[in-house]
Length: 305
Image (cartoon, rainbow, N blue to C red):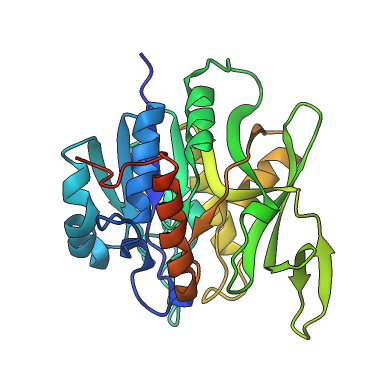
């Protein structure tokens, strides 16, 4: 039987959360963190292994808070995303203060992930439906055509907004085959009385359809992506005018592959409501949301016995 892996991106600094390690903040009634619920849902959907992408300086805290517990329940591995982990000929620029983005994060897994895999953010709650749909897609045989075959969980924009500030979302265009045709990284999207809008620096609002599908960085991929990421990362660095800024991002990479007709990305729509701790002020709402899910019977009071 085909094996599938869940890759959890947890190397983010979490600057908008106020400097804390937001991925390790307890939100469940028995001290659970968001990653607990994601791994629980992934295991229930059929994933066999979890790989955590973290920074080396987070390893001790990460293992104590979640890693050691998960190792008793599912095959577990770690990879480290560091700013100086660069292709030959490149060095970390002076003044760089954050990792190189989700593309570099996934590339860190190339030596240990040999099977179809899903990628998620550590600080996002995705709901059960998306894990089932992505896992089922990865278990299917998509053949060996001219294009790589990937998938993405698509969430309704209105279900992914924060009450406490603007968020960045990959706004998606989808064709009649449910293939992604374009993804546009769009920043500072806020919740409004009528739905959603992009807020400019001067406060001006541009309405955006709250029912449009967006990427929440939940992708279903295969190891075919690693050589693409490796060569693309070198090209990205070579073309970056200011190497203290800029990130190598999966939505942008996927968009380029689609436009060059090198990949099909099937959008698997989910009606579940996203929530996460983008801002420190989000935490009470996340705690309340998990309480509601437990009261509805979606999860147990103590997630893992």
